[in-house]
Image (tube, rainbow, N blue to C red; front, side):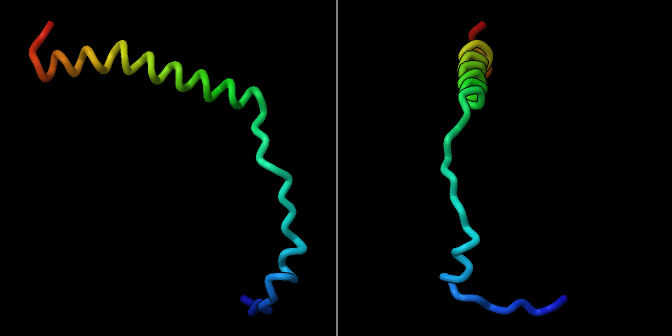
Amino acid sequence: MADREEQSAEVEHQYHHYRGNVIPWFVRLMWLGFWVFAIAYTVIYLFPSLQTEFFGRQ
């Protein structure tokens, strides 16, 4: 492999172009759906199972 020539930070900076971090609306909607599902799943299935497992309630 060929050795790379080290360049200063100013020279390398000319190739870095940041355009922002705007998240599209449909990605936000997908995350919202995921969190709603995760919370509903936890409340419906996990908490009752933990109560049965730890306290013996049915």
